[in-house]
Each structure stands twice: as C-alpha cells, then as structure tokens.
Length: 107
Image (cartoon, rainbow, N blue to C red; front, side, top):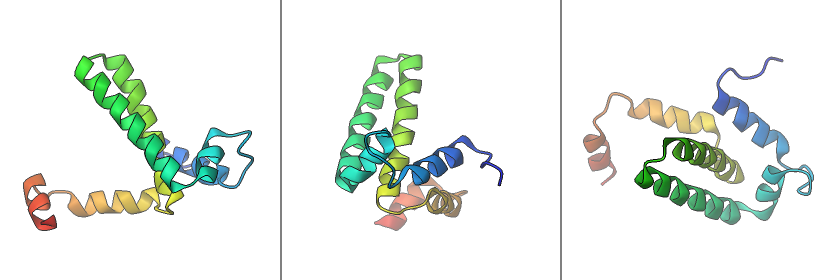
C-alpha cells in the first residue's frame, strides 16, 4: 500500500495509527489517551501561540507554530472521530462561495 501523497493526509494517517499505542512512547498517543478535552485545550494553546507570532511578524516562528496548529487540529479531530476527508469535503462544498455569503447562511 502506498503512502498518501499529501503531507496532511500522511500526518492524519500517522495520528490514526498512533491511537491506542503506548502513551509513554508517543506524544500523539498520550494526547489521544487523555481525551478530546485535552486535545482541544492543546489545540487552543497552539492557536494562541500562532496568533502571537503573526502579530510579532516573525515568519519562521509563525511557520513553526502554524505547523503545530495543523498537527494539533488533526489530533483534536481524531479525538472526536472526525476525518480529515470530512473537513476537506466541507471546504470543497464551500468552494466558490463568498465568505460573506457563507457566514450569512450559517446565521
């Protein structure tokens, strides 16, 4: 079986593979074992760190924090059994729509 082509797909597959493995051997396994609330809190912390770096204007630090945000988002989604494919399908559904129209539709 070949590995998924896109780095986010590969990362999501790695996260899925770590579910249920030894939390003492894997940060991902530890987060998932601690539950969705811990995963969500960690995602929030990383998002705040990315915002701070965006405000500071340090591109390299923002890039690093953005990678952390993507990783922790995928862990949080996995903790709630939401597949990356489902999120991508939602983005495709919204494609071509004005952001203002999308927000108005959500009420």
